[in-house]
Length: 171
Image 1 (cartoon, helix red, strand yellow):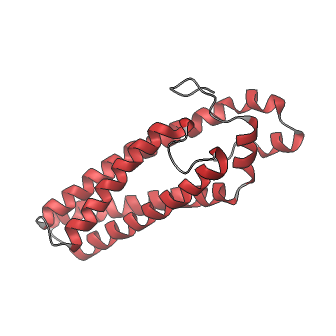
Image 2 (cartoon, one colour):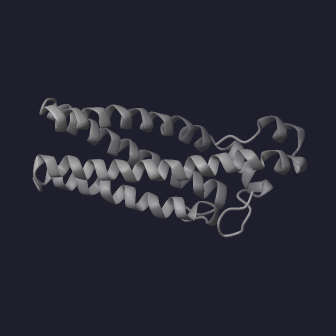
Image 3 (cartoon, one colour):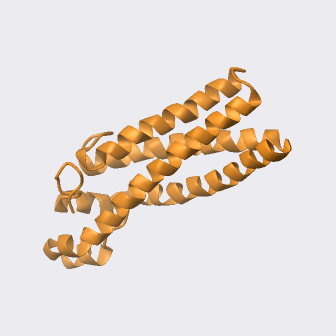
């Protein structure tokens, strides 16, 4: 499958490295965990903004979401190094990584505002919501990329060994 710059998403060797590294499983666990924390946190933030109740829980959930984001970004960079030979901005995931930097910046700005006592409480929470909106866009980028990888799997597996074909596309 080609991505926006016209390159193959995974070469057979990259696909093999992707399927063999433990970092693929780590990403596969952290991504849904981060999404679950996001959903809970979003509900807590909206609850506080609508009712004025649960400020501590809202802030704590955003901090937890941000820490999980940092963890998934570090482990994702390691995954990218193993699979593509570079920690970030591999051609196959270039735009996803670029947008991930915006997501990181917004989450980090929230932490700076919270722990630095900057902005009003509402301002901090709206900043968190902006970070969450960017996260949703970034997650959609990755989901679309994974879907493209899965759709390209049958053609890609024509040159795979029987063991590689049995593994399938896992990311």
